[in-house]
Image 1 (tube, rainbow, N blue to C red):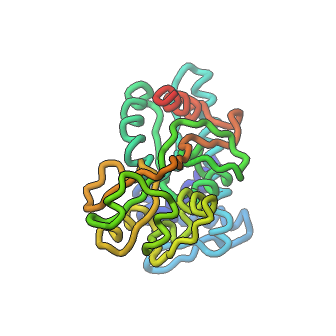
Image 2: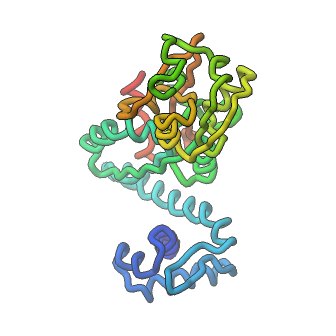
Length: 288
């Protein structure tokens, strides 16, 4: 099929070289190169930079890559629909997920789901709120597991309320309190994830009109927790992130209760593949 050429391109980008893509897909490096050349010729633009160190996307490639992934996604959906008509249950599902959900919810869910549907392969792409929204909008993933966002038009399936908490180092003055308010956080250095754009914490701070003293930002919440442990500041996170922490920090509930709603967002039920629908219904039964 024509999409084999797109698969060769995507695999080369993912693995960083034609030789690695060839080994993964069962072709020769020259065969992978010819397929990528054919894609570039048909589109009339250069998609990959080729060097001795491997391959990387050109600027045009970066702009096109999500569209190419969407083509592969729709082909996979076509195959799944055909398998449904023939009585088979096969396919693949790509989930975009918060790291905390991928760590604490998905392992058991995927284990049990694959026992019931062994022919369905599941991929997980972890990321922060804004990235997950982009992945879903581009069709790169089937659905995302994230927090509710009133500013997007995705379909929403709520699963669970998750309270926001304040995370502080051991021995911090706030440790003396059984609960803290958002205003209590104003007097201490603050650490925030996602390079200062962490959606759930930022939304809460804005709603409370709380101008915290942001001293440090990190890419991930788990890096922020390590910085808190070192005494560099405090932070606000939803409780699921702090589950099972083996860190010298204290997690304190916020009062009055400030919770986020975790759930599944998807573009349109009619555009979901049969495999994605089965997985969403499977997850739904776990929580509802």
